Structures are given as C-alpha cells and as structure tokens.
Image 1 (cartoon, rainbow, N blue to C red):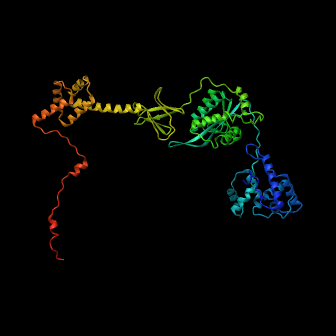
Image 2: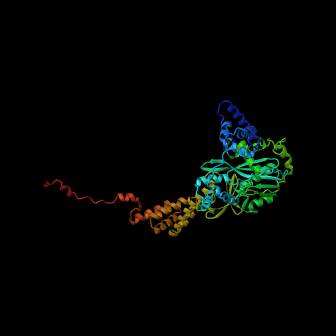
Image 3: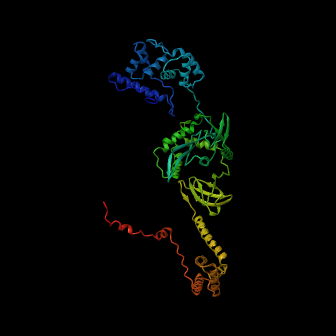
Length: 542
C-alpha cells in the first residue's frame, strides 16, 4: 500500500510551478481521502480530486499527451491516469494495444473464471497449455491477474439495537506475563453493550471456561443486570461444533445462560462485522488503555481497568447519540437489563487428579501437598483465582493459596510432619516386632519401663543393639535377670550379659564392619622376589 492508506505516492520533489501544483493536488487528495474514510479506518473506493481529473482529461484529449507524460507532469502514478480515463468512458487516443498470445484464449479464460473464481493461475495455465498456449507461465500469471473477476464490494447496514437487548463478548490477547519460571498469556475478557457501548474489561492468565464465565459474572455484577442476547464468536468456549445452521453449544455455557436467563447467539462464520462493536472496543482498549501502561501484578492491572471503564471509557461520546456520553446512555439502558438471579452459581475450576506415591497432587504446573493417608488415590481439585482446595468427595483435605509459578511446591507443614512422625513410629514398631519374636521377655521389660515413664524408643534401640551382639537366648536370660532385680533398663541387661560372658570365659562381642574400600586396602600383598635385581649387577657380554 503506497502513500496514505492506498493513495499513490506523489513526487513533491520537482521545482517551479509544477511543484506548487503538485502540492495543491496532493493536499486535495488528502482531503478527499479523509472524507471517504469512516472512523473505523476502512476506506471506501478512492476518488481522485476533481481538479486532477479535469487536468488529466484535458491533457489527454486536448493536448494529446500520453499516459506517461501526464503522470510525470502531474506527479501522480500512471495507474491514476488510466483509472480516470477509464472512468470517463471516452475512446483512448493512440496506437492500438499489441496483440498477445493469450488473446485467442480469453473467452475460455473468462468462462472458466466466471464458473471458478478462485481457480489458481497455475492450474489455469495447465488447462490453456493443453489447448495450445505456448507462453511463459510467469507472464501468463501476470496477465491472469488483470482478467480475474474482482469481488463486488459489499455494503453493510448500520445495526441498531434496543436498550438492554444485546451484548457482545470476545477474548483478546495482550502480550505475556513472566511469573517466576512460568510465562503465561495475558488474556482480556471484553464485553460491550451494543446500545450504549458500555465496556467491561477484565484480565486473566488464560482463556479457560472457568475464567470465561467469571468474566460474565463480573460484567453482570458491574452493570447490575444482564442483556437479553449475547453474541459470541465461534470460540470453543461457546460453540463445540457447527455445520451450517446446526450448532452444538458448549453444555457448560448453556447451563450458565439458563441460570442467568439470556440467549447465547453465535455470529456467522467469517462475519466479524456482526460483532463489530466488541471488535472496535478491543481496538479502543489496545490504543487508549493498554498502550504504554505499567502495572505491578494482575490485580493492579484489573483495578486500573475497572477505573478506566468507569472513567475515561464511560465519558466518551456514544456513536449512536453523539450529543450524549456513554455514561448517560447507559444510565437509561441499565433499567432495561434483566435482573440478576438470586442464587449465582459458584465458579470453580474442577479437575480430577491422581496422587502418586508422594503426598502431592499436580495442578496448573505446580505441586500441592495432601495428607499422606490419601496417596495412590483419585482426588478432586476445586480452584478459584486465589485458592486451591483438594477434596475427597465432600471432605476438604487441604487448602492452599494458588500459585501461578511453574514447578513450585506448595506444602502444608502439618502434612509433611505427619508423614515424618509416621515413618519414625513405623520404624519403632518394626523394632518392637523383632524383639517380640526373638526375645519374648522384652515386652514385659518395655511395659514396666513405660509404667516408670521411660523412653520406649531409646530402650527398644538399646535392646536391638544387644540382640545384634549376643545370642537371643542370652539376651532372654539377661532380661529376666533385670526384671527380677526390678531394673527395666538396657544397662541392667548389658551388665547381666557381660557377667555371663566373663563366667563362661568368652571373647568380647565386638562387631566391626569395615567399608569395602578399607577391606581391600588391608588385603595381604605378596612381595616381589628380589633375586631378579641381582642380575643387574652381573657383567654383560655386550
């Protein structure tokens, strides 16, 4: 696109009167450009300024100038000159155009393109080659571009809606946010009332269904009402499948619409003009709110968005009623909105999760702790933007603040400590079982020690060490002797075992277990015979 929005570039570098003339023509072109464009930036068919048209026609017919001469002298593109001459409908003066190889095939080409307007030039080139065309494919493609039928410009009616009748909804992505190690998309939920152009804006970190519905509820709450119809694009949160006029809505959205008593209505495929109000609202948000805006976090950005919707966005002029602001028109429309339901549904993200061998569940890129008693089970996560709850049926097992980081471990200290205590208790129970099987009298000693407030864990560990060094029968006899003396302690058992060993003349029970590398280092080494070195002293024949 050249120049301003498609207007051909005009050379304003020449000198003399031609330069003054060209500047005036260029200014007139800019004025014509502005008058033929609406506020949305979409231009109508370009109209050449009247003074330029008059001069082109006069130079061509009266002065017999060629197209190139007119273009150079008026400092306009040669296509502008040809278009003005074609629109005038007067016969061109000059030599007849040269004949081309394609001339004989033009009737066939026009007939084919009329039936198949989108047929590619390469396929059409193959068809005419089969009929005898011998031209080059690149030149043929250039010629076909001139003969291909142009789509007719479509005219649109300006849609007008009744107060409270319609709203339009859409998502828009605004860059990304870096949160810890996670890079999350910054999505904007935008809803606009078609009559008053009142805008609601809320930012989320994804475009999932739960956030989609949260945006609806926040907009309805901010407006204290619900429009009767909401227009959607064919996004997956609204339309799961569509074949012609047969539409399969998302069941969650249908249930939500039934609770708030509005009609969800998707627009036609590739017909963005049907929801042009929300499209223009998104452009307005990008240019007037988000551009060059700084914020600390998502909550700060949403607070600024709410203030902007209630302030600058509401104070702009209403397109349908230029003498009134959006705020004034919305004040009249608000009473026409449907009332909010008495029992709004809780909007929670519900996900089934599996607990592995460690007491953690994985949700939204992070790990959340659960009681260790629920490992190897299926649980349910109920999450909102600030809290994550893990439930088993109707029982809430854990509640954590939600993290938007990646790979973070969010723990409840009691969950971890309970698992540690359980492991220690399990180790003690295993030692108790071993003692009960090998030395039955140990249970009586432990019971008498517990009555006196002794540390059962330390006593169990001491008895297990003695059982590792001495025979089980000897330990059994020593425990019985300690019980007879009413001293339920491992030291009394150890003294009895030492006395028995001295009476029997046995060796001290020292159990030394060396590491493997130490045992290998102490292995005996056979010395080398030294006689071989004596041969070095003997004289050699050489």
